[in-house]
Length: 297
Image (cartoon, rainbow, N blue to C red; front, side):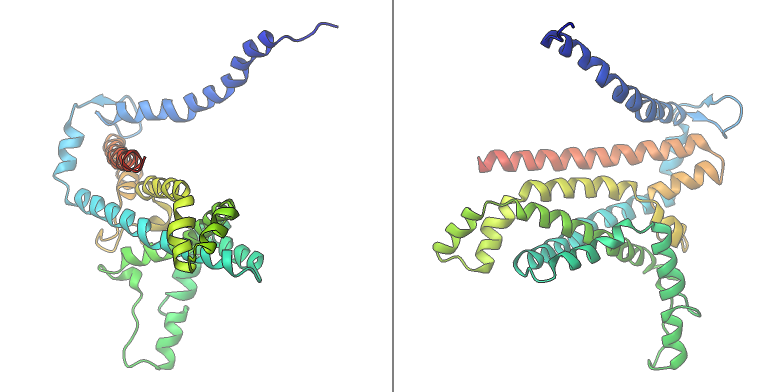
């Protein structure tokens, strides 16, 4: 029976890496290159694409909905960098120090994350915010308020913020579980040393626990930026980008151009801009964090 040498294992590593490379090449690289190519063409999905240079991008710059979508994406990103992360940290701290029933509450907070976005949107739009069949309609019917409540999803100034709230409802519990898992890994000897030095609850939290999980917080903030620029499902299901394009996002604008107007070239151009904007924000954010770490070192 022949023995397998270390050299044989090293040569076989390439074969184990090959499937992952093929998957990434076919699922990520090929569609990305196709999107870049199609963004410079005029194509309705049938026939052969016709190269039209920068026409799609020039047309996009004259589209007011494009600027509305960019502003909404920025609002969405800022909101999710603040509200759900703060909520997640607060609940994680509560679960860390108040251990009675922690497992039950942790499971309850995580449940919205495993529910389909379609179900969540249906619950809020039909069972809560609907003017006739929802809780909002019931409140109006019993007349306990001196005014009539209006579905915020149908109001121009409130539709986007309502979508943010609904998406945040399902997202912050996941962050709480992630932060709690990170806090459990903090060396207890450091916390005990802080207690011996007379540190109270807030000092332990701000100067021991939070700095110890800073890497986890930064990672989740980075992922939040990426997901914020890619957000689509909650906006499309709840409002479709309306009313009057008030909740339009770059993703919904691209989807509408590609599959409703059948202008795949324009949809690809919007997708490319969306990726570039997200990449710029991510690069700026990462460089800022690296600079901060170098200064701290």
